Image (cartoon, rainbow, N blue to C red):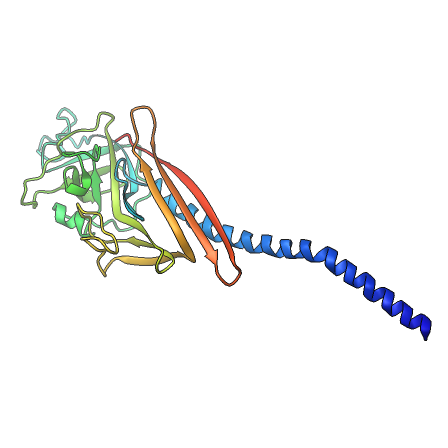
Length: 285
């Protein structure tokens, strides 16, 4: 009996020592796993944002506080005059160069368009493009006055489109729209929707909005032009306690740079992580 009691005492002492020794590493292992889960949540959100931001029309990224917006490119390429063997004003022969100073015309795509939706939406004026009634074509967007797609300077409705040619048409536009500039490299972008990511640290969320009207004023939750109720609204990530969005406009020697920083916190676990992600965006229109 005495020997049994001694064995139990020794085992108890050894167990207590082992528990004291192992408690720290086990606690750290659990905390590391909890932080890894938070990192995964934050990283997934940042990757989702940067993947879409890289599709932005050149010089269309704009930031207001904790809201970032851009025009999403669904396809694009380089253009040349379409040759159809006739000599009319629209789709004239290849001896007649494309004239972007008209409110409607068409051109052939160098290569092909491979990412178009199954049934592309078309229209006959800029309003159709701005209110999501039609795909938009943007040419030579510098983001400056006179070449700003948000202001309607260089964006037109797509009236017909295939993998090999595009027809734009703003003939129904009351302002008598015409493209003010041609692209030096004959580039164009096809836009399907503006996209916004809005960080709300009060609600602890980042939400993604799409399929809303293009506006000269950046829409934000608390701004002068809030996102319409008809916008596609999706929760991207919750548990957000802080966020920062910045944009360094591109120059002649480098691309634009979007920097995203978000902090994710789990109050129940008392864990918090901050991640930063950067995305280069093309600024050559």
